[in-house]
Image (cartoon, rainbow, N blue to C red; front, top):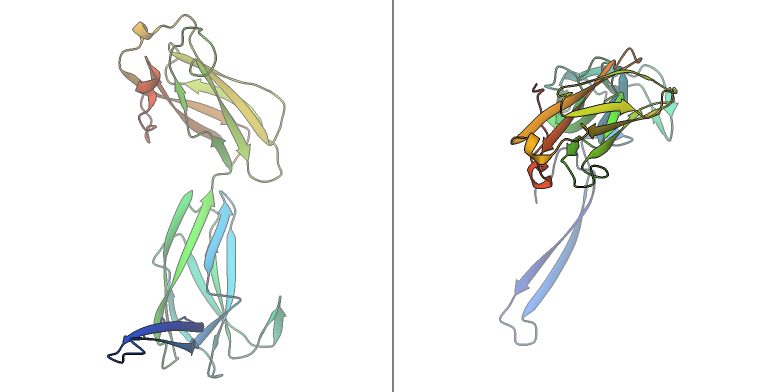
Length: 267
């Protein structure tokens, strides 16, 4: 049986044994093994750190040698320039939540700086220690930085409709600010003003704002050649997120708008 360096639980396995005995042709053998990790994490070794754009985040866990000896972290490398690992030896007893830190333990803290880029990333934290069994090992981690102002849906798809109104001829984008603060939309710019326009639904400060996007009046399918990939640039009064760009796809029919939204601005 193979075990991982951080495995700290009971494992149960079974083996099917075939025999030539007439009355017992198959034997099912079950056994359990208690696996104890040489280095224990408290509360656990799930290293997930999340924050919002412009805000620093920290995640702290306690490391301890299972044999009771003093733990020394010789190196800690995340392999990611946006995530910093800091180790601090425990010098006196302290209690945190449901577990107690004592001299000989080490605090491991992951720091996600405020200027970290938006998105989700995964990796492995590489640790080297003075433990003879776990002298070096890796701990998976995940981190996420959410945009301060998010929008839904991921973009707007427009196409001329016979009624020149309703779904397809117009669409809505909802912008939501993470946190408790309100914000306002101070301006809107569109890439193709001759094809579509955009306007904010409400001018009052709020945590959620809505923008309506619609095709230019009297625009018919014959006026659109191929597929137009555009964007809406929404200006806000938030100093951290002053601009939000929403992709727009316009085609002469609904089928033509099914292509993925552009990842880069095209004018």
